[in-house]
Length: 402
Ligand SMILES: Nc1ncnc2c1ncn2[C@@H]1O[C@H](COP(=O)(O)OP(=O)(O)OP(=O)(O)O)[C@@H](O)[C@H]1O
Ligand SMILES: O=C(O)[C@H](O)COP(=O)(O)O
Image 1: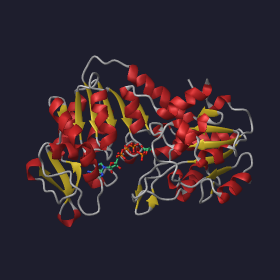
Image 2: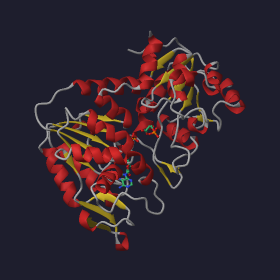
Image 3: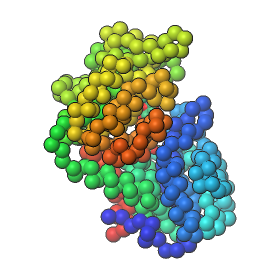
Image 4: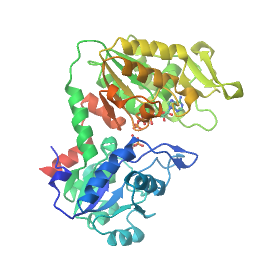
């Protein structure tokens, strides 16, 4: 087990890793559940008199979501109802000067860690610990706190490097998510177990199907992941159209695996039989999978599919959700995601809803969190925990405690 912030000495200078990765619409960062959860950890640390520098990431280089953390500092400030400083630098001179001026009870957000070249390449913790990024920041603080459970599956410098070179502790979100998600993995169910898989990150989800196949009886696919499976099944969908970069790269990387899984799991995979898109007059329009066209951007599963998936949920003893079945942020394309969530809320099945973005649908559509077993702000990390696969950033925290 790891040490937690309960084990911290008083009045420390802390480097705290959050996961504030959020949707970005037209350059504007959207508040999601992660801010509220991490703000609670932050409040506790500041009230205890610690000086806190926040390290976090947003998007990936080359994507529209790869932006500065300046807006994230403002959103955190709104949650805390106090000032949150920001410096547009991570470990250079400006960052070090700002860190130097940090007093107990104050907080400073550092710039997007993924703007540093040494952050992203997936490498062993020892290699990350040796980077200039980690070596420079480590000397500025008494201890490192990792609260970013939802990024704990990534072997990035800010997640795995620091615990190798300094005292390291788990924050409240890390502790709570780790406990909840690990206990789910050990549960056994007598009845049917259904998993709804959607969202944009096919490469995170595909290994999950094989990892949980002894527990999960059927998989309902939607979102980008579902469209890639439809493409493998021979339908004219799952191709990038102007302005999207979801499909072609993932298809090239995952094609063989998708085709194999489609064949091996024929009986347990449920693919959409209709999809929705933006039709004339900007209205939602729908089409059966036989009528799909490569040039159209499909934004949700169709109503027939949504109804079928909701029925499957109602017959289940346990339901796991990871990733949205459509672009639920736009009301016209929320039907698939919301139908599944409503079906869970109406029945008394055990349920877990995961995903930094997906979990936001619960409050957006007025559902009651109490109707769900566990709502996780983690996506990739939560599904890996379900398969029993270790999370590298948790492992280094555990090593640090020994
Ligand atoms: N057909 C689609 N086209 C474009 N975007 C889609 C489609 N279906 C779902 N999405 C988007 O997928 C997003 C959620 O997927 P994502 O992979 O980011 O999962 P997540 O739930 O946030 O998990 P994580 O924590 O891993 O990021 C939603 O914001 C939704 O708009
Ligand atoms: O949003 C997430 O799932 C985490 O922040 C990890 O982000 P990534 O999938 O871009 O590595």
